[in-house]
Length: 358
Image (tube, helix red, strand yellow):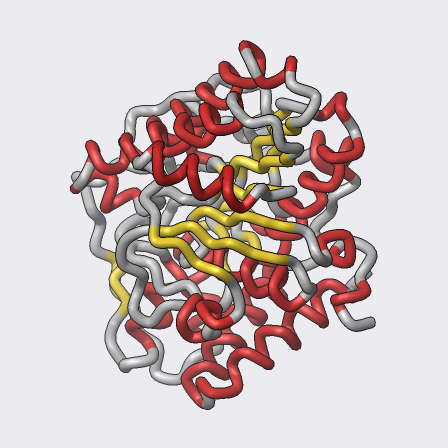
């Protein structure tokens, strides 16, 4: 089945959709899906992209409308939203790299927290019908090394600038929703929490899979800074399907308004960084790595989400094993470096295969 006719994706045809952070990794995949399925998309982003950039590799600037607006600029942000009159908003704009958050904490707090509050204030004053999915992070939870996995009701807030700023944004969403937005029948609000998302086209700084690709594609040795960290590795398609399901369920079910949802992989996908590297080493010729611990950069050793709520209330489920997740990712990069001119069609082919899985 062509994904344009998929039971989930066909609901967005001709809908007006704003994606903030559209030039990022997840934002680019969302842009591709919506544009291909016939939605009217406006991307709002600001600043530099990675080099290479998935957004530019897929030539998405020719497929959707784009606005160079900083979400910290309330007036410009508000004017663009009011003019476009979206049916859906997916708020992904963020400073999302832990290392960069330590280097630029003020920018991180302003973008992640104030940028979110600006959108909430825009929603508070609008009369247009809008479903908004706020994307936060698994790192919003206070680091207590919970083996069962963090539930939506667990305590938010941790010490690192990225996690703390996203937790603050998350709390702001809850505050605005309970104080103002729940009274407005024209609005539906949902919070999506996920993390350690991998897939083709991510060249972000300080992330494991992009670091592997950037080094091994140039026959360089990979440096691992935190080998024993356990992460819930998950393919970007799994997360995006969660965002889309949440958006449609919010539109139809008022009782879900204002609620938070975790989107995490099977417990079998939660393994150590070193185990991921060792597996990928068997898939790449002349791959080398070295462990060099970073004692100054603090990150939680165990980050695992409990997604029972999403599975029960949204009927969301994961489709890919860890092996398939890694293979999808490696295959995409291999195709890109072999024939970048065909990567747009290859990306659509991957989406086609994924969304037709049962």
